[in-house]
Image (cartoon, rainbow, N blue to C red):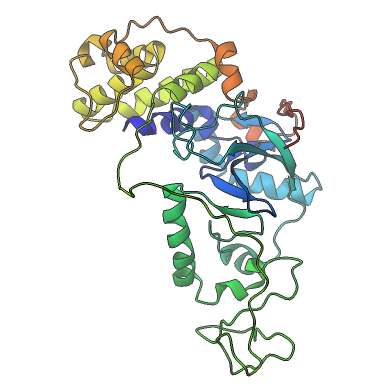
Length: 391
């Protein structure tokens, strides 16, 4: 699909095969809101950059690693922590005013898009350090219940539709997988928080009697005159003002090919080479009509992208130019122009032009030998840390 081109371009490049967990980036797909004490909100996205630097494998090198050490990434992380080489990631946030931003040619809540960093700079927010290994894999690992709806004060949900769906389903999934009282487990409890009590009582595998001092254990509702709980004081709510008709429709500002074009241009040469190899190899196993449609998409992204993958498939732009846009597909004026000149749009590889668009950090080309030796003699380049910004 058109909206998947950005994700596929990233995933099938070496950045989709990190040399280990210590050498991979993190990116929060969903958009949240930050709320201040006055109830004012901003939109926010999260990034993690590894202080160990970025390192990735080509598909061929990854195959060698898998043939000798199936759990290499987990082993590398465990061993590094055991020897006191604690992995660290810098946490950055991007902040945007909380409105629809009609001046942008993409939707800020579209999970298939990133926010250009020259418009929404990275702000350093903290450091994550992994400083010990788990002692009990069942209690500390298998029973972890992640959920997008578990928030701290100052965070709220945006109208990101994927976030809405995940928030409903994740907690429901954990109740089914772990049990209705999964939040009582130590690994899922908030740390360093005192005085938080609920009316949750009983149920399967309940082991914690959640009672406040003086609370009547027989009262599980509020308000009550028999020593029941009272709701904690609330700070001002995030109260968005909405005027208009609520409808269900597709996003109007799609612009699905610009960001994968930028991603392709900011890749290092060896990353592009492996991306083309991986795309050609996998598409070579598909039916002809699938190959043609994918090549049509790739030419709309970038001439070089389509030409090189097409060469691997024995096809050219002329073979796919006859294809019509998909039913319901929204093309921009630029997409329409590119479609008329498919394969001959004069595209260049211009990393300097696109560099302002994303912090495409240097990616070390790791070998199987590097990984199997524990990445001990590897000299990666840590990601440059953006200047601190007051917000």
